[in-house]
Image 1 (cartoon, helix red, strand yellow):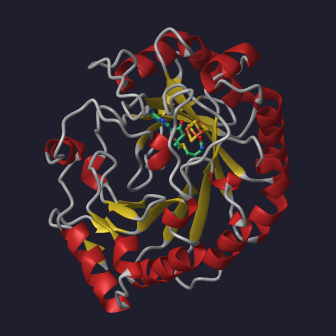
Image 2: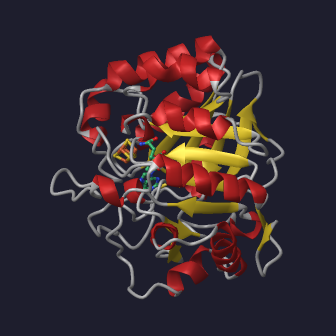
Amino acid sequence: MLIDKHNRITDYLRIAVTDRCNLRCTYCMPESGIKYVPKDELLNFEELLRLANIFADLGITKIRITGGEPLVRKDIMKFIKGLSEIEGIQKINLTTNGTVTGKYLKELWKYGVRTINLSLDTLDRERFFQISRRDEYDNVLKCFHDMIEMGFQVKINCVVMSGVNDIDIIPFIKLTEKYPISVRFIEEMPFNGEGKDEGHLVWDYRKILGEIKSAFPNVTKLIDPPNSTAYNYKIENFQGDFGIIASYSRTFCGTCNRIRLTPKGVVKTCLYDEGVFNVKSLIRAGATDEELILAIQEAVSGKAKNGFEAEGRRSFDFPVSESMSTIGG
Ligand code: SAM
Ligand code: SF4
């Protein structure tokens, strides 16, 4: 079992399988000048599956596949199939931008994926282009409808940005009337790959909830699942529900059960740390499984109490230069 000094159990691994992406969301990546990780510096699938097996032995039961856009990595389905065969892994979830996802839905279902987080920040075609810098709205919407039709549990991830898509908050709530989905409003974090940081957040979780309550007085609080990063709510008689993720305010760290692997093989025990160690270097230096286990256990044991402590331990201050595409969200 992986347990840290604050008595939190880590049972959830998030793997960013690539830093590449076919969109350029303004809050995540700069428009140009991105230096992708060279392919031979990525953890290959053999290494990733070895690690996933080790993590499963250490008590990981849930894996999220993310990126970059995970589905642009070649042979990703073979990898997901491999994950689905690991004893102990009970859930494989995916976070995707929905652009190329449609063609993989049947296979994803076959390999046991049932919940998909779809990033969609607006229900307006032009704003979609403005935010993602690509004309993919129709594809993404089609993917949304296909997923619902096939029975996937769909969670929409919407990063709320002041003056950009704050007017989409209410339309997204209305979408939960019609569809049995969960819309999750996410506070914007400074991981945009450009070092841009306003230093303050306009749309924090309180303001988002206030906006929704002013339009829908009949908001009901739901019981949050254990380790939930979202505060969850529902509007009476609507099919779906909604959540607010205080990712900048960092209110959920007390129950954090997550560990992350970046495309380059850096192990992160907190979104806000700068990486604890590089597991790929250990693997390529010939480390045994026992050595990898020790390194992982040590990293988890020293996990920061919360995102503020992790941020304080960084060797350089904010604004950070990382992009969320290299961390995995
Ligand atoms: N490309 C996939 C996608 O967009 O769903 C997976 C990777 S993406 C980095 C994972 C999640 O991180 C997305 O839901 C995205 O909205 C979120 N994200 C990216 N940059 C963010 C930021 N600066 N603040 C908050 N969330 C962010
Ligand atoms: Fe790509 Fe996802 Fe980042 Fe958008 S949020 S640029 S889709 S990795």
